[in-house]
Structure formats: C-alpha cells, structure tokens
Amino acid sequence: MSLKSIGGSGIFMSKQNSPDYTVVRNIKQLATPITNGKPFLRGREMREIATVDNAALAVQSDTIEWIGRDTDLPYHYTENANIIDGSGLVALPGFVDMHTHMVFGATREEEFAMRCSGATYQEIAAKGGGINNTVRTTRESDKSQLRKQTMRFLDKMIRHGSTTVEIKSGYGVSGKDEVKMLDGIKMVKDDHLMNIVSTFLGAHAIPPEYKEHREEYVDLVCRKMIPYVAQKKLTGFCDVFCENGFFSLEESRRILQTGMEHGLTPKIHADELSPLGGSELAVEVKAISADHLENISDKAIELFAKSNVIAGMLPGVSFYLGHDYAPARKLIDAGAVVALATDFNPGSCMSYSVPLMMTMACTQMKMAPEESLTAATINAAAALKMSDRVGSIEKGKLADIVFLQMPNYMYLPYHYGENHVAAVMKSGTWLEYR
Ligand SMILES: [Zn+2]
Image (cartoon, rainbow, N blue to C red; front, side, top):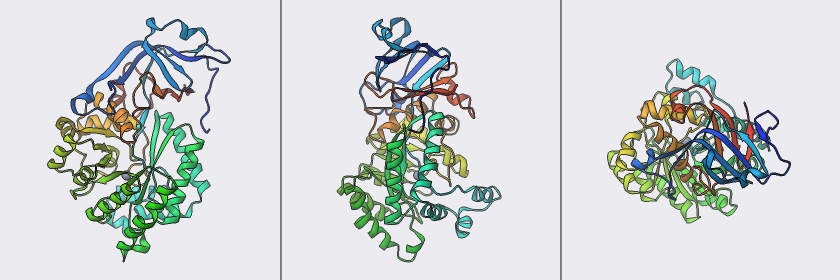
C-alpha cells in the first residue's frame, strides 16, 4: 500500500485495539446523491441530494453500516469502536474520476509554453509534439518507472478526494506497449488503496510507423490486440478516439464491435473537435459512456435522453485548450445521464482535481452544484459499472468517504483553487491529512 492510515493525531475520541466499528460522529453535514436503488440519476434527478446535519456514520470493516443524525446513533455501534470526531467537516462520497490517461512517460510543459505563445496543435504536432510525443516517452519507460509515477499521482488524487479512478492505455499503440501499460495498471491496482478500473484504448492514435498504411493498424487492434487483452482479462472496457485524423466513424464502429464480440464494454471519445457522429455511434452500440461531446449534435442529445449512454463531461480540457465546453445544461435538461471527470493527461488536462472540474461544470457549463456532485460521484461510478459499490453514501456500500473542511456541500465548487479535503476514508481505512 502506498498510502497508510495515520492515527494518533488527536482526532480520535475513543480508540480500541480491535474495534468492531469505525464511527465518525458530529459530522457538520453529510451529503449524498439519492439513488433509491438506481444505478445512475438522469435529468432532473441529478439535483436530488440528501443532506444530514450533525450526522454520524458507522463502518464495519470496509462497508458502510449505518448513517443518520448523531443523536440517533444506536448505542451498540459505540461500545467497541474507534470513534472519530468529525466536527467542522462535510462528508461526501469519494469522487469517481471516470476518465483519465494517467499512465504516461513524460510531462509536456514545453508544448504548454508553445501553446501559450500561440502555436497551434498542428504546429506542435509537426515538431514531434502531441499524443505521439507521449507515445515515444511511454514506450521508452519501463514498467517500474511507469509504476512509480502512477503511484505518486494516485496518492495525490486521493488527497484531492478521489477514491475510484479509471485509467486508459493508449500511449503504447503497439501490441507490446499496450500490454505493458495494462499490466502496469494491474500492478498499481494490486498495490494501491484506490479503486482502479482500466480501459483498453489501443485506438488512441495511429502510431507513426503506421502513418502511411493506417488500415493495417486498425487490423492489428481488431485481430490481435483486442482478442489478447480480452483473453488475458487485462480489462473489461474498450475505448476509441473517434475523430478526424484519428479513427473514423467506420473504424471506430469496427473496433467497438470487435471489443463487444470479445466481451469488452464499449466506451468512446466522441465529437470532441468536430461533429463526426461518435455520439450517435455510442447510442447505436450501446456504449456505457461517451466522453467529451463538445460538438454533440442536437439529434444526439435527444438520443442520449432516451438511452442509458452516460455523457462524460471533461471541462478541464476545454479550459486548458481554450475550446468550447460541452452542452451539459442541454443534456441534463433533455433528461440525459451526465458524468464528470478530469481526463487527467499530459497534453490536454494536467489536473487530477475533481473539485476543480466541479467548479468549471458550474461556472462554464451552467450545471447546478448538486448536479456537479451527482456527476462526479454516482453517475461517474455507473460509467465504470461500479455504482452498486461506490458513488453514494448508503448502507452496504464501500466506505469511500471524503471529509472536507467547509460549511456545507454547496461550498465545494464555490471556493475553488483550494484543497478542502481534510481526510479520506478509503474502504473503511482512515487516511488523515489535517
Ligand atoms: Zn481521453
């Protein structure tokens, strides 16, 4: 384990050697989406947040056992328990970052500087930058280097309140290097407290060596890579970057359908830079999520409202690249299921702060603070098929709870650029930072 539980800091009200329960008392406010047993919330439901003031919660092992008002806490939970004082803290479900590319070789601050001086994406790519820059450094890195950096990022993500994270491959774009990435993700999954879900994204970019005969690379993805990663059970999801200059609609359809034939659930990077129709394809293949959607068509918004495809909003990318934001307001008003993530990657969003994304969701995409919380928790968990275990604070769910020093949950997107996380409970283990 990379992150260790820290005790003895004076916040324990009562500490036992082998307690039956961990109990947090006097929590200023506990807030969680109201699921009523649903896997996700759509449209108007996204505003339904339950709050309990002066709350308590009891956890047995890694599972939430009881939540309610502190004055209603049954006595037996306190008899042989580690009791922790939650005074002044707001408890929220641990954040679920449902879209990241956090395993990569090297950072790209030189390209950032070029962009700040007005260089276009094409100019940067012509000088060896862009995704292919990260492909080169990721191929050059060995598994232990990738592991070390990823573990460090995961520690910091937990400190910003994330307790579940999705990580995509896609910087290897060769059979050997994609497997190296997925193997590396599996290694950190075994070694870190974070819940980690991996996604195969062999179709992230056409690798430089296939530039002149791209169809051969699509063949390689479909005939070799997908069958291999499925057979070795390296992941349960298959993603594609459906975009001009990357993978066409036809190629994307073939890749996702091949993945489905091998038992991989489809995900898609859709309509980011142009309205290519990736959103419509997501509905057609019943993708679990379609992410980006900056250029989604009105027709596709209507289709999303009638389907269970989760619309993954990545406002950090629009902010970082100076692009238009996805029409989250329109999607929610139409009745779609909307989730939120960082897209943490070295090129288009070098941030793993989910609370910062919530601020952008509110100020730039006109989402209500309640909607941003639902999008970053239960709906994001559903995009990873994990909403039966995480994404809300409910009896029987995993005790993944973030404690923040602030007056109420609405304060989180309001006061931005500050890490309000005081402590995190991950699977019942108390990680304390104050
Ligand atoms: Zn992405």
